[in-house]
Length: 68
Length: 77
Image 1 (cartoon, rainbow over the protein chains, first blue to last red):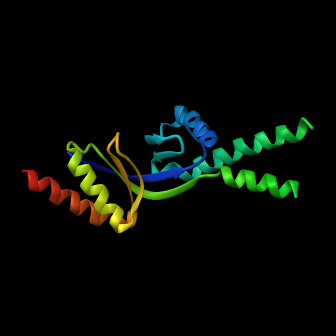
Image 2 (cartoon, rainbow over the protein chains, first blue to last red):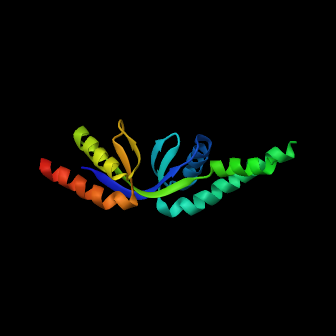
Image 3 (cartoon, rainbow over the protein chains, first blue to last red):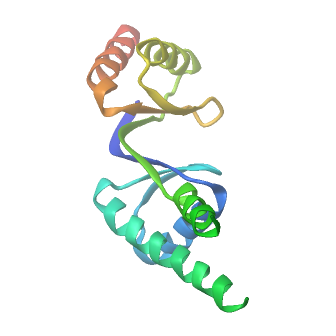
């Protein structure tokens, strides 16, 4: 039987995809892991996911600046 | 310029989310292919995978694709 699930397909690069997989271990919001650059997630988690990823990416940017 | 490059890099990393429906568990290969072709012609396929038999359809296309799948399945009953 064909199944249809509502959600959000997120396209991102593979490094961000790794971050998403890491975050999912705490939250479990991934409905289906599609491929290296796509993941299908619960719609209600997208805003929080964006915040979490921005925070992680910004942290990394600071580290680069400090090491100069 | 360095700041702009950094901003661009961060921007590039960000998520591109699209509200959609994921179709899965096609028991027949022909149903999967037929649905994928129908959705492709409508221009509503956001992502698909032949091996996993998964199709991601935009919210705009969900109703039409859902009706199409229902017709396909009823035909086999």
